Image (cartoon, rainbow, N blue to C red; front, side, top):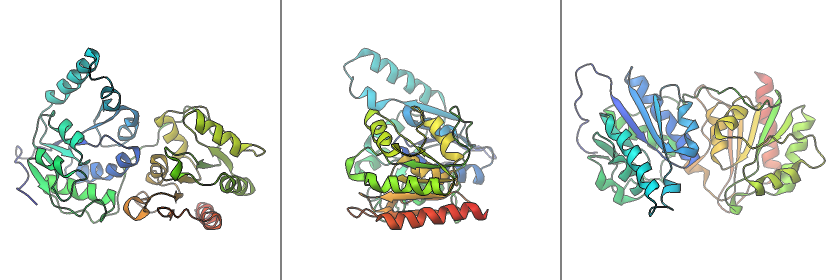
Length: 338
């Protein structure tokens, strides 16, 4: 650990900028850190810098005042375009207009550290051996020595770094994601099991026949199976899964609209994606299917107060159908008992 947190005006709550731009699951994992800050420092002003496509997530947090969207994924492809630099300049102006007591980089990447330097305030992040990209640490004024990404769950890393940044004790309470459920724009079935069978990489996918079995299980329990999708290829996949069943296929939904569908679900089963983590953060009974990642590093974390969550499988070892079906049945029984 490095020097003590910067002094603030006596009695003044801190003004904090959280830098956590991607990916969706990582943004979800950072939400409890904002809750911790607000609880430890009543009246704290918390802003959040995030990729525009995920901006709806921190916007749902009850303690986040303002979300600053960034479109770096788009900008980096058009760095020769004058419009890109004008947009970057506008965002930099917004960041510099606010004086922060702490610019907290929860990402630990060179790109996030560079964006943190554009804000007006002392920067705090991970130390060389703790950051995902060690070079990022040179951009911070204060650095925390924490277990690495292969040693500590992502939620816990974010919470510990936030506590270090503001001079607070390491959190001992269960993580509170601080989410407010949005109103749905698309009216989903009230009694629904939401399935998330799509992922960004083929290595994460689970056999289609297995999903059809889960759809049948949901119907047998009187739950309407809702199959979420994104792009055209994913739409084709869910159409195949729904064929011959009573599954419901929503239209294309924004991140915010999808959050509303998840927040009111009876049960959620999904691949290792940001939306599955978001469902657990909303406190929904959730089963996560891991086919290409170790869930010990970023397994599902339920909302404060406790909810049923299971992270099944491992890198290169997809969970068998019967294991997932049993977990799905447990999740349904948990709902029935409440």
